[in-house]
Image: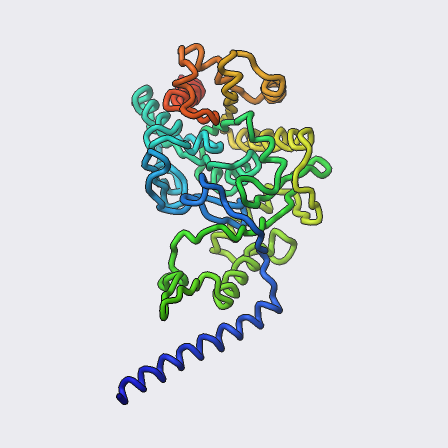
Length: 398
């Protein structure tokens, strides 16, 4: 009986201590409001299992996540991207190709070996055995050209690429660039100010519907604890909120005009990259959805900046125009498709018309696309891979 009483007293003491600690951090959080706010909603079905909230991009892949995505097995690497893991440092003799884009590059509906970057790696190994290539898939399902730009300057450049390819999807990239909310969740938005690229809605609010990817708190604590038949979500505790907010506040401070982020902090390193490649942050610009002409001008500016940053490093930059199904079926390019292609080509940016590539290879629409929503099939992904191969080998080999 005495032992039971002692156990009960110890449990009560632990509970009381936890309540007092939680209460203390509740007070501290009132004096230090979270730098990342919350918003209603949550990711759509296509994003809820393999993606998580990110305070810079809006969302990103979950590191080392794997499982069934529709009917195909999908695996993400340690950075939350599809494809092999590569160190930022490049080994001698290696040529690197990075491929940027949205779900078309990420490989929506494709197995790991069916994505365009995976097929490109296989093709280059076969067609250029004298040269070692590494192909990095930096596509993220649901990204617009704006988030792709952020991923390029924050992560892509650290891989020291030798070739950069951007797959542009005419159907929704411009809409995504002009919006602060897509696919059920918030995202940052670029706007132009005096010719410079500026961010608003940064950091984007975290949607309440984002599920935690299952990591351990502080490296060892489980996120959810069941006591007396009740589940307690430790990830939502005031104690953890204080420390998370402290890290975010320190890291994002440099971007928002305060002292620089701490060295060695991964988020801080992102911020340092942003300070170099983003001209300003102004959250007083509260337009949630820009008109198409404005979004189109921002899109041009983002692509031209990526091309310029690549060319400054002696890195060839390519844009692949991925057509809507209706355009591919008819063989007719829409006015906007032609306008964007001509505008980029006029700026000296190489542009590949995927309609021409597919038709030249006699790929019918049923093989070019696997789904009525316009996602490329295995053959369509191969057309992207062959287009990049031609570009790379033209530049790489004498």
